[in-house]
Length: 211
Image 1 (spheres, helix red, strand yellow):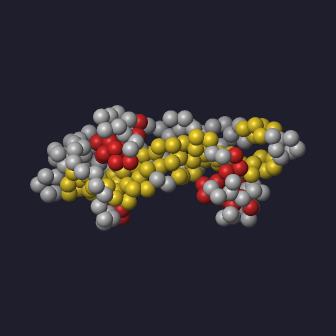
Image 2: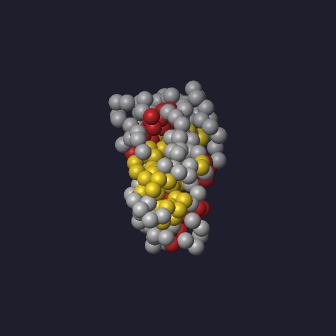
Image 3: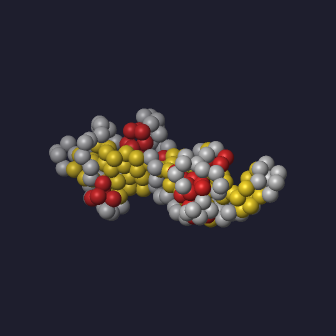
């Protein structure tokens, strides 16, 4: 999956059958504090119930401010890493292996084909994209910052066995890498760009403030 370039000056093996219907209750506090899922201990033919499905965009890298004069030029400051997004599952004993859990989540949100359980979305060994070298050619002057982010998917789940026993957990993967450039003196409606601006341009910069 390639990088989706944000507008310039931008103005995260077991059974998987059963229902994926979302429930009405939240187990996020317990699920996120659970341990990594243990493979091979899940019942067969269990049912997943997904709740609290979110798709936040997380800032993972930002460059220092770079000034271009009249006519623009090429940005050269490298993007430095701020955070890493990991693909994985946390759950109590009795949960299916991470790949099966992520396959169910991927099918729920339309990222995994119903006949496919080998999508990148379910790969717990998948690494987040490397950060680019920060180079971009612009034809205007200003104080610029290059940033990188990832569109993440995270959710809580219940895995219920036919006999009634239930395991809760939390799953996370990512779907879209995003690369963007902002200008410190221009406002933006992009929350991720504003976060990058606060870090590099400064909290008092126009780009760091809500438009």
